Image 1 (cartoon, rainbow, N blue to C red):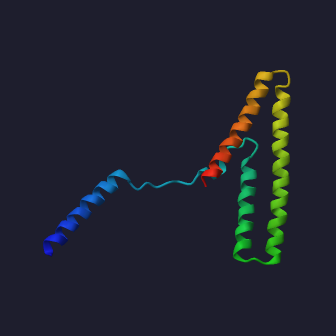
Image 2 (tube, rainbow, N blue to C red):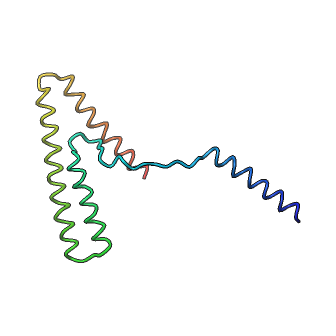
Image 3 (cartoon, one colour):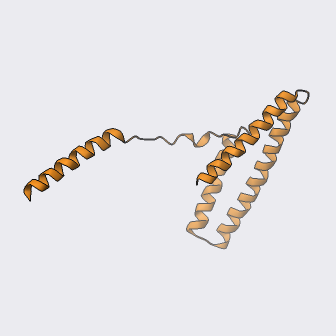
Length: 125
């Protein structure tokens, strides 16, 4: 019985050694919150997004009518401004290359590929 326990502890020690070597612990820094994949989103917009998330968390923690109204108003205003800003950004991009079809199609392809990438990522979840 003692020999089995010793063999088991030796096995576990070797297994843990190999596991730690294959999958080392790494410390990840979460500093990328202010970087955006969408070029029309500025750091101020990303801060507003964090504020919107804060309102939502506050509403989830304490679901009162006041918290719901605050979150809903902020969410709707944020979405309206974001969509208007995105439309203006692409409108400006298209007016920059209004006589160049090659550049126009590059912009269209870029937009479509980013949405396809987003759809594929959402499907993975």
